[in-house]
Length: 202
Ligand SMILES: [Zn+2]
Image (cartoon, rainbow, N blue to C red; front, side, top):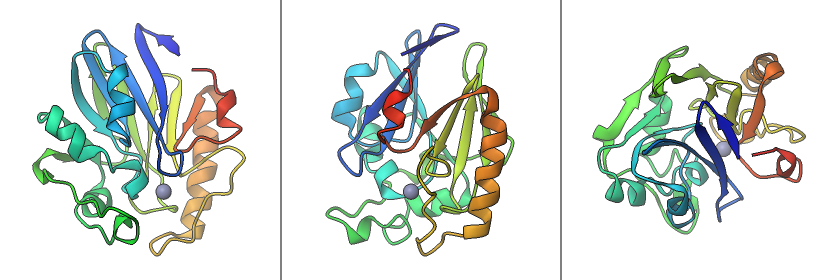
């Protein structure tokens, strides 16, 4: 747990592929980074969920969103244009090839963020969106204070997966290099739990 300007950050490891959801709370407000199993996330939520910062729209990072929206219908889902397309297509988010196809119920809750956009999360705490395409064109890395949420664009110790239909190996390499530069003074919070990420102090 990190106590950073009274903000509390928790890691929740989801059932599907050990993807990670991060719960950022301050006062009575919460933001999530990605959304898997809502039953595992809920115990860490006090008050309202204002939004979800998406690292990308592969289904293992988004499959809890409809459940979450049923509980918090006003929340914003922040992503790029490619992420919006993935949220609305079980083919693009690959859930079609798994047990339960997922398509977002509420496209009106999607908010497109530009590369470099700054989003206010809590009083005195903002998130910066950095486009990091390669693993998927929908990849956005989020920087919040001295934390960097990399999704699947950079998982320390793991080779970035570029074998998906819309992956781009060269873009992934330049995104990874950029993240490593940005992350020099930061704690890295990756999109999947690995043996390495267990060492991250939360
Ligand atoms: Zn992925």
